[in-house]
Length: 130
Image (cartoon, rainbow, N blue to C red; front, side, top):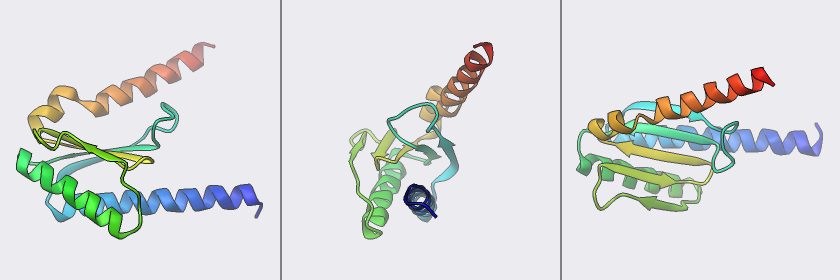
């Protein structure tokens, strides 16, 4: 295996471990409707977006707290958190993964899955025309 191949494999293992840790942390606090989106081809800002629902703003805050706590325990860096004051939409930035925890009404309104899905399909359509 070349050095580059080893680095890519190591990065993929790191990302996979991080994704699983986030999903486990969300499920621990009964977050639900978890969607993992690979956005590497769409943005250089992050590799994955994970969107999850919580039944209330209080639960959304608790899920975000648990994500931060569990990932810190595993040695992953936390870049920041936004939206905790209101709790309708809490974002946890892990650099390689951005986690969105939303109450159902907010999630339905912003519909990130469709937004990012449409971006992917538009990008595919543009490349097909070139």
